[in-house]
Image 1 (cartoon, one colour):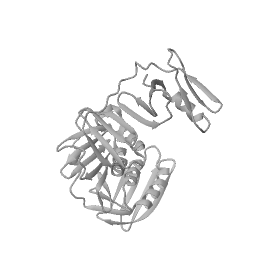
Image 2 (cartoon, helix red, strand yellow):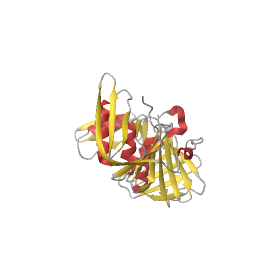
Image 3 (spheres, helix red, strand yellow):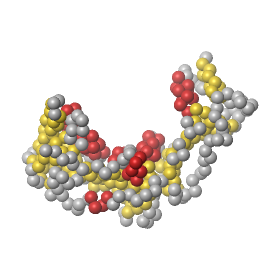
Amino acid sequence: MLAGVRMQVDGDTLTITGTDLELTIRLTVEVGGERDGAAVVPARLVADIVKALPAGAVEVDLPSSDGAEMSISAGRSQFSVRPLSLDDYPAQSDPAADAVTLPAADMAEALRQVVRAASTDDARAVLTGVLLASEDDGLRMVATDSYRLAVRDLPESSMLGSGQKVLIPGRALNELQRLMGDVESLTVRLGEREATFEAGSTRLSTRLIEGEFPNYRNLLPSSYPNLLTVGKAAMIEAIRRVKILAQDSTPVRMSLGGDTVQLTAITQDVGNAVEEVDASYDGAEMIVAFNPDYLLAGIDAIDADDVTLATMDPMKPAVLRGVGHDDYLYLLMPVRVP
């Protein structure tokens, strides 16, 4: 039943709902409705049929007689699909929590920066979520998979009450990013066990994660003695080239010191790659190594032309920030190398 979607026609509005009991997405579209009704149909099969139909209007018809099949036709193409049991489909209810409306662009950018750091390992359910916590000056979003940590502040955001915090599945927020598109505003309703987001004609609901999020504040020192500043675009291109030789989980080494940063990847019995990037550095000379994919993800998330990498020593977490952008940080654990 969960492999199906519920289609309901009311007047000239078609509402399509899909759910896996943890995450529910509902979309409404304008159609030419001839009679009201509802049906549950196999989602993937019907989607494949509609995609394959020729351009133009599509007619969907389900006779009211018992056991009738749904017909889907366009042009000279015609298909029939046996619907699933409407009565067995999970019941949906409207959210009861109060609504808060936010600028969609701000939330979309925050999600882009933070969700990437959430874990995808269901064995550690708490780490698959994104923490939304009320701060004195607004909202803070945090995600970590224990190897990296992303923190984004949204000043003057009033989504949560004072002292309130919720843990929303990263999977649901990934879907929300795709659904937001070009909408101007996002409506949010946070209940005790469920969060609901409305973007344009789409509504997404997800169960909240129960559990205590790790105390991430202890990982954020107030100052770092070593600071590298480098152009974002140049650094991304250099890492992408060097990581071609970073096979089998090989880290990329960064040699810090002078007016360049040297990137090196060495894979035994395969080869090595070396590239230098113009940079400015203030601190002790050192070599620090990182997982190249995690490093790239952090730099890519920063919305600035130049990025800074702040370090204490090769074994302590490093922090990436955008120059002139203090509302976002990406903390990354280094990799021990010989």
